[in-house]
Length: 337
Ligand code: NAD
Ligand code: UDP
Image (cartoon, rainbow, N blue to C red; front, side, top):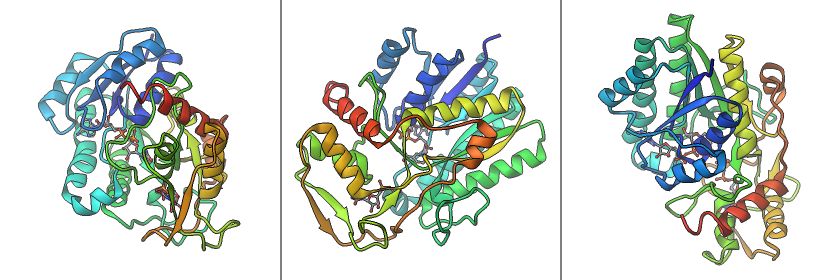
């Protein structure tokens, strides 16, 4: 029988790409999103990509009665929980909002799952939960820590999941620590569309490519890295999406909880990303070197062995593919959205 999956935050950047992979893998999917950081038009675009109507409910994960109704209406086999707040800078200014949405939101989902006897959850965690003193490649067993309220909420959520599975051995969880998601779907119909000035590198570069901003601000070129600029592990969002399908397989077909990194296992410097984007858009993008950004570390990238062993997960797309699909999205889908 077709398995039914609840996707919270499914109209957002990672959720929408994961939806496409889930439909391709034969799952029946219901999206719940409050549209606080996404647009209703994504539903139509998902329908265009998948060739079937999108099942969407507009609701807030903080609204317990709405959640109960959602869980009462359908018998879900699993939940993939993307809904949450994710802006590091904003989290410093509004820590309580982050605790409420990210932490209380997860507890709400877990309690509703318990009532409805749903025992599989995939959770969006982040590489930000690694202590900054760890040396890359980062392995899942390394010490954790946090440097801002956003990171704190992700760490607390991981700990809540550990307590919940301890208390209920029936509950299986897939904790996925994302590295730096980038790129867009090859159709150009869905992608990353930040409302404010992007803090992250790739969306900022894309706005320089589109002419919206004048130049790329490179935060420091005096790091102990090959070219002096910061190194991160960028992963194509479609690869990240397939990681969720692999996680569901492990939970639903093998009954195995897991905590894994989802990255490429390879670092790219800011200059690498800028050069790749320049190739993708066909012109050299202007940049300026500025002082280091507060709180940044020189480099971080994933050890991907665990994801390979436990999930059989391997990436297919490189930095050129991330930049080419991002540019395609900026030039097509993002414009008339
Ligand atoms: P996103 O903002 O694009 O998607 C999140 C979606 O959740 C949005 O559509 C938003 O409208 C919805 N949402 C927010 N609060 C909600 C609420 N209270 N009730 C219902 N829906 C709500 O973000 P994303 O980049 O797709 O990230 C998805 C998840 O992955 C988040 O939990 C984020 O913390 C995590 N993550 C993201 C990154 C990244 O760089 N994008 C890295 C690591 C982890
Ligand atoms: N970065 C940059 N200019 C920007 C945004 C980011 O030079 O406008 C650098 C940043 O210093 C880091 C890398 O790009 O070395 C990735 O930053 P991002 O904020 O995208 O991810 P994170 O630091 O959270 O991993």
